[in-house]
Image (cartoon, rainbow, N blue to C red; front, side, top):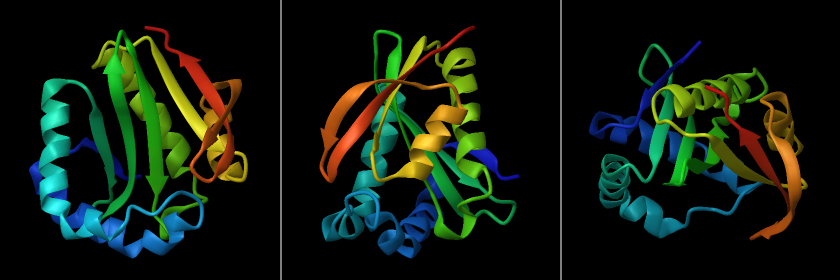
Length: 161
């Protein structure tokens, strides 16, 4: 099983390789990051680390023993004991339970390390795999919303210490 690591400056090359290798795969189910994201990757990476240092976000990478990034599991917009959860898994690692494991691990850290009491998430109605991960990890549907690609469900997980 890969290791879940808090994002650091050293992850930049492997993270960029992950995003480039999976760009088309991700774009099939979520909005593409755009060319500017890749052109300004180093600047964006530094900005993420600054957000993390400020405690407004916690970015995690799932790293295999060789140092390759296989996924991301992030907590964003941390405020008032809650945060928004987001995740993406490499195409070659999909379907093996890695997203479920990573989300569970981040939920544990959300309580034990970051002191959070709730996590929110949203998943496109067409993204059955993402909705299944949220269901398996204890999130409950709280309503409907619209993401950039269309209708979606909103989710909530109350965290227990």
